[in-house]
Image (cartoon, rainbow, N blue to C red):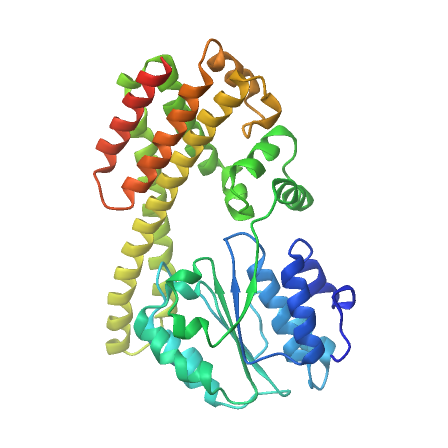
Length: 380
């Protein structure tokens, strides 16, 4: 698509990069000069990498296609029926080595089924084991001329430097709260202070904001607030953090079961030996996903506690317009009455310290107990 500039991008790609000006400029240049063989879309979760990859892949597949508009339409669908778009997602927290080898490395040797190009998208590329990443190096370094690879990663530091160096990096920045709020409002179903709070508490991750607005997310948020408010009220002895642990446990179990079900469905019709291998892999994948989801939500619940303490400091200093929990201003004012804002800020620092400690396998229950009793001593 010679001559393409940022404001002349195809509609789907323009919409996908609306709030990512750096990515928009980079991809406009790629289409103008001809797409390279490998890209790394790097940035936090929920910032639009997936939608952008789908729109960019559709434009690549339209180049030289017998019917470009039809190629775009099919590539943009999810799941896509286009035979030259291969989209690989990990079944849990880690890609299966065999799937990367079969669906990407070996498949890249085959010429396009239609048109002139093939596109391979690897979602959550950081979830590839080193074995998979090393196996992919040759394909990244010397791909067939018709092959384009797009790696998506929220944690590019987990990728081998040799993988990163073979890709053109396209950066995606965390979304401002007002952008998250606008996006979710446009989807319908949510509005008002609750949406505004979710957009501010999600850390620029629109997917996490959507989770906060769900029943499960609301339960987690209420549990986190109960912990923070108990510390302020001198009620840490009620051990409200046990409910947070139970919520994270339940979410982890559900996530693991979903992975196991997906892999079981994918194994249907395979021969007995392959089915057994897939079953073993599925069990391990389900366990990894359960642990990862539990850890993720426990960490996020602590982030919510930290946000509550920071909001208390803001209210105590007369800066209520800076709070993140904009739908809880009444509760925050009640908790901030007579509070030293320095103590609230110190409590927020304790939360951050605990989040770091939990990354090195300390006892979760003991860490939470210590945190909230120390916060109680500061705040009460």
